[in-house]
Structure formats: structure tokens, C-alpha cells
Amino acid sequence: MGDSLRDQLLKSGIVKQVRDEPRPPQTHGKTARPGAGKSGGKGGKPGDRPAGRPDGRPHARSNDRPRDQAEIDLARAYAIRAQAEAAERKRAEHEAAEQARIKRERKAQVQQLLEGRALNKADADQARHFEYGGKIRRIYVDAAQLVSLNAGELGVIQQSGRYVLVTRELAEQVRAIDAGVVALLVSPGEAGESDDGVPADLIW
Image 1 (cartoon, one colour):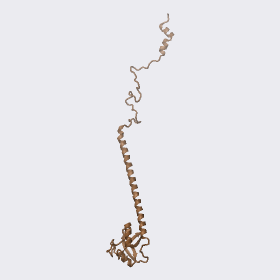
Image 2 (spheres, helix red, strand yellow):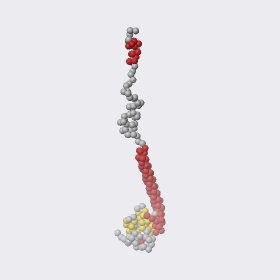
Image 3 (spheres, one colour):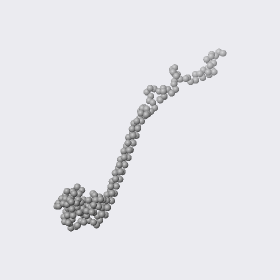
Image 4 (cartoon, helix red, strand yellow):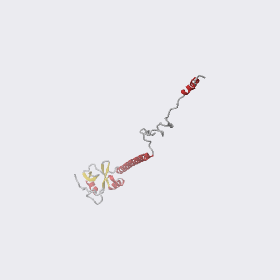
């Protein structure tokens, strides 16, 4: 019974066990809140950035929708315009091809009408001048043909770069197919001067 209480406690190991037990962390009178100090939590510092873009700005919200809609409308307008231009080009190409086809058909019909019916003479020595295509042209005829041409009994047809002398009847048939190739056809009663005002007796 001579041992003191301290010695008895040391011998029994109770004091050592008490000292060896870990002490709870000191909070200095404050209780730590869950999640405190973590970024993004309610307890974060005032300067902490919320989750979002790398530059700290929040993700785009509904305020970006008007700009996106305007871009969509602009792209749609460009697409509609491109379609309209393509349709117009296609229409113009189709029209040009159709006009070329009609021109070929008319040329073939005129050539068929003129086959073997030209009145041009190789020994004709009198030039008959007339206006055609914005320029003064000429065809060589003999004396009798010149009188008939000035009286409107004969006509001149342009074919493949040459001028063909034909009867008035044939010239009228050609005019019904393609009036543009009728180079000269004097109206009856205007002998001595053609419809274009070029004197019949003009000599160059």
C-alpha cells in the first residue's frame, strides 16, 4: 500500500494508454462546416470562380439565342438566294438552247426552200446596193434582173454568208419562216428605191 496512486497507475498502464490516445484537433472554439474550403462550395472564398468557362465567365444562356437565330436566318437567306440564282441560270441556259434549236430548224427549212431555185448569174455585172444588218451590201444582177428587183418582183435572201436572188413568191415563203434572212424585198409601187432608202441606181 506504500505505492502512490501515480505509481499504481503507471504500473497498470492506464496512464500510458491515456497519453497514447490521439487528441482531437483544436478548432479554437469554432466548428468546421462540411465542405468548407472546397472550390465551388457555399463556404468558398468570395474570390473563387464558379464552374464555367476557363476565363471564369458562366456558360452561355438564353441571351445568346437571338444571335444564333439571326445567323440561322442569314444562312437560310443565302441558301434561298443561291437556289434562285441557280434556277435563273438554268432557265437562261434552257432558253438559249431552245432559241438555238429553233434557229437551226429555220435555217434548214430555208435551205430546203432555196435548193435549186437561186436566180444568181455568174456573168451578172450590175451591182444592186441595199442596206442589211446595219451595213450597205450588194448583189450582182443583169439588166433585166435589176429592173425586176427594183419593181419588187424579185428578192434577196441571206444564206450562209451569201446573197441569193429569188422570186418574190419564194421570198415571201422564206419571210414566213424567218423574216430576219430576207435582205431585200421592195414593196410593189416603190420602183427605183428600196425600202431602206438606198437608191436602186447607186453605183460604186
